[in-house]
Image (cartoon, rainbow, N blue to C red):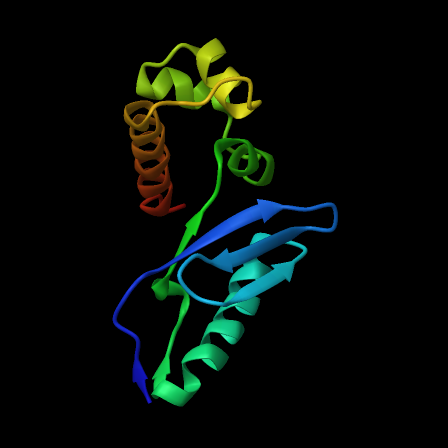
Length: 129
């Protein structure tokens, strides 16, 4: 078997019991109580899907698509006010996006995502002494 050489878009939705996910271009669905378990279940389902074709997938093949509301509910460690200040956005406006009262434009979504990625990169480079 060889590794699949493409990204698979997966849409994630919050449910009453956890999370559900589906690959947009494939007939692959999965559920789990949390995001780490969802990755594990998705990898298993995708490997079953691609098994006959001789491919295997891992987490690097999966591109999760979450809405802002779900992101901030799951990753509570990231404070929306802090993020708004870091990216130069009005905290009230970001709060409206997070609560689903308003929908961000593509430009605003990119700005928010870039800020999240920047903070994540900074955190991944921290070393404790």
